[in-house]
Amino acid sequence: MKMGLQFVTPLWFAATRMFLGSLCLFAFLALKGRVRLPGRSEIPILVFVAVFQIGLPTGLIHAGLSFMDAGRSAILVFTIPLWVAPMAVFALGERLTRMNVVGITVGLAGIAVLFNPLSFDFSNSSALTGNGFMILASMSFAVAIILIRRHSWTGPIIRLLPWQMLLGTAILVIAAAAIEGRPNFEWSPPLVAILAYNGPIASGFCFWAYITVSRNLPAMSTALGSLGVPVLGVLSSALILGEGISLIIVSGLILISMGVLAITVGNLRQPKIL
Image (tube, rainbow, N blue to C red):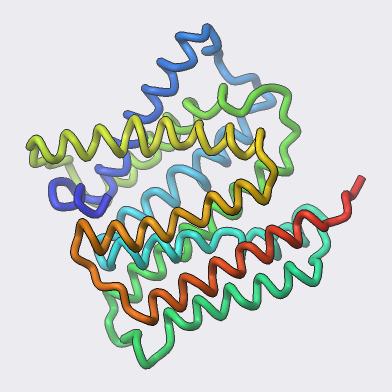
């Protein structure tokens, strides 16, 4: 994503990759003969997911990357479980276990490390904007998770996903046209390769894969696997983009990862509410 912003503006880039991802998912479902229009009862969740899981956070992440390093952004977006846990108390009636509280505290300590005044310049408006966008994107993902948990599903989530991505694309196109004007793509072989990765693979395949993994593996396995997201983000940003790996970044990553694990353990101990 960071490399793609060299060739196209953030919101148009986000809209393009989501559109390509939706096309791939439609093709996948068509091969299985499972493409169908959403039912009337599915329209609300389709809209909510399109807004809070696709349109809003994707736009925020791509815009935020214009102001900050890719590695740091991967860490901040990964804070989703820190926001889901307290939201679930009010929206789903869940109880915070002791491990949940420990996880939230440790995770927030990790965020505090990343934003400590000795290493973060609060007078830098660009840095504040970029980091703020990433945290808002993480919170938007958390809202989407809560809405998905509350919805009574009558069929496989995968059948709605391409429609949600298509609607999310429409939202991003409207935002891009209003904020960035007409699209201006600097077409080149690197941009084609970047879109080929970010569209079919990082959007279409990965959205489907994560849903499949989440529904077929234990929560702890999914959480442990997800720990690779910020780690690979930090390492690849250093190797490919030449971004530095500071002690602050490593410390924040470790604390946030420990917090996410603690929350996951706490959720596994959560008593089921009938």
